[in-house]
Amino acid sequence: MKTLNIAFRNIFRNSRRSLMTILAIGVSAVAIHLFGGYVAQVIYGMQTDFVRDNGHLHIYQKGFFDFGAGNPVAYGISRYLELIQMITHDPQLKDHVLIATPIIKLFGIAGNFQKDVSKTFFGIGYVPSEFKKMWQWNDYNMPSRASRKNRVALSDSDIEGGIIGEGMARMLLLCDQLNIKNCVDEIPEKTIAPIDETEDFNYLAEPSASNTNLEKIDQRPKLDLLAATAGGAPNIVSLYVNNAEIQAVKAMDDSYVAMNVSLAQRLLYGKGEKKTTGIIVQLKHTKDIPWVKARLKQLFAENKLDLEIKDYTQIVPMYRQTISFLFAVFSFIAAIMGMIVLFTIINTMTMNVMERVNEIGTIRALGLRRSGILWQFIAEGFVLGILGATFGSIASVIIAMGINASGISYIPPNYVDPVPLTIVIFQNPFLMPVCWTIFVLLSVGSSIFPARKAGKMVIVDALRHV
Image (cartoon, rainbow, N blue to C red):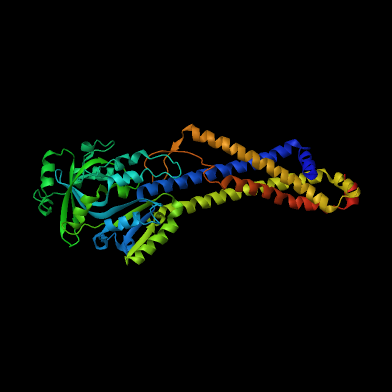
């Protein structure tokens, strides 16, 4: 304790240099804290959005993940309602699972034959009420995205209703009917190929009295969706577009169609057995994924079900890629800040040693051992590290609170609307303690070389140093 008291007084013998050193450590700590808090916000925000949209786990017929995009009908899950009930009522899983819901992924051709236009589409069928519950998942208290309100607003009772991407609406000339901004229903004449007026998908449609009645009274824009059924025959259903929702990726925006799972089943399976191409499982907490996956595999093996399980990081590879990128950038910034602190401490402690050569010789002549000189200068580096790291931690909290309260927003990659810029320093409980400890240890380590130099001084040479 006496050594630390002397060290504290010694570092302020040249207060200007010591304050600059403390400031350098503090600024480096602020940079790492703020960027680390930003990285945590991005990771937790991405995870929240992906889990809201895709759940934690997807259950597929084995082979669907690798080959199902080309032929989704071949990988349908039969008796999926019994499978969902088995998952949600399992004594070991029911306390971990929030929602288990069917989802259908399909593709085909969408046509707006009132204006003689059509294009390929990628469709998703889901249960709107259950997706609305999924969107309430918020394990990290992240802000909601306004652009998803349309999607969760679909109704279970509106079986023929759906949502399309804004690019899809533009290509199918539905801009005016859907009141889409910055979108016009005009195509240069040279790009429009002549179309036989008799061409239409309606002759392929499955007879349905409800379709006929809705077509007479429903004023919403109508699309005809064509796809191949499980038997390989073409099938068509009518989709009444509620609204358009812009997608983050243009290729998806130009092809996106969302609909009720019942309509997707009618399109994909016709009059045959209604199946689903996958089951989404959303958990209460992300940390439960490994345990739940192991339990599901056990259940599938006991019931001889040929199913595979994929988590959200496999469904959305960009999540892992983004984390790897941010970790690399964070490591690079931390290394630069560490080098700044390292050389700043070495320079400060070396100057302290050079200014106190006569003092070192005197106290050595009075009987202080070399180890005493060594520990004295290491203690000074330790005190500098504590003061700098503590100052940086306090300043980081104040700056982060200011940024969070400022209302600054930005549009990250793969987003279509602004999100608040927030720094979540306390969301990661290890960031601040680990950073503080590393800066203190770095300060101590940087002091060792100058301290050893001071301890090795010859008493006679130190006393006659001018």
